[in-house]
Image (cartoon, rainbow, N blue to C red):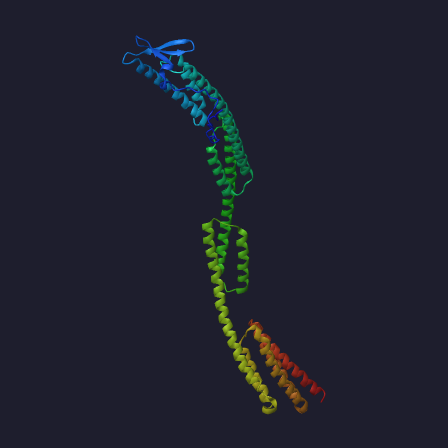
Length: 434
């Protein structure tokens, strides 16, 4: 049997081979006299299984012309029936419409004004009607299968939408997918109204659920960002207040804390976040640039101080009590020590070296003094008194320096007092053992 037309989703079937079982109907115009006659008064008859039937009258010309005229009318009907059969066979026609047209033609055959093989044409029409019935049935099954497929696909889309609505937190990806699902939904046809409405209500509910969850998420995010903006505003204002500070250590430490607090505050709205960050960085950069400039100047000053102390050491290391005498050596060392204190601080890494070299000179002079004490016992008391005066002098200087808040100068004076105290102790021991 010819394949029926399919009107829903499946593609049309390929045209089938010719149906060898179909009744064949000869064209009446090739031999009109085989199927009818025209009598002497011009009445046209067609031969049927029940006998002749008058189908018309011909008065315009020769009887053969009239017979041919009615035969062509038959062939027109025959052609219409064959066209219906061809459309059914190719699947390009609507089988219901084909059956309706075929039945209409068959119902009119008994009164048709034609000459031809009416019995054969009736059989051919019955064959077309049978094929149309089969095609209608197949089309029905195809529609049912297409409907089932459409329902199943919409069911899949609904379930996917419901999963996204309940679980997804990838808001942009899920939102794009729901829009794509809606676009596909619109292309799916063939679902009955009741089922379609039920599935649509589920899909619509899923979209609403997703939109509510997404809206709630971004509302919370907006609140968090507003809080972060307020907190970062406070951090920026503090950073700007600190930018002119010259309390280098504590301020640098506070900037590190501010950076950690900035990260902990979270993200503000992008425009505000970028603007606040630029202000924060500008304040921080201003402080560290100022500190770097001051440190550079201080380092340059300390380096120059180190150079000056090296010059003093060059002088001190030339002191030789054996050549210049003890008093001259002590006087020269004392002047160098005073100038040493006036020079000021040196780089931290140079302190040990420079102080060590000066202590070596001081030790050399002290050793020479002790040796002289041992050689000049009669003068021991005078020297002890002199050393005692020097101790008192440096202790007084240390006390004044501490009272003035000059810790460095106080420590230096105390160190010198300690040195002279050692010499005093040696002098007193020399007096005691005389």
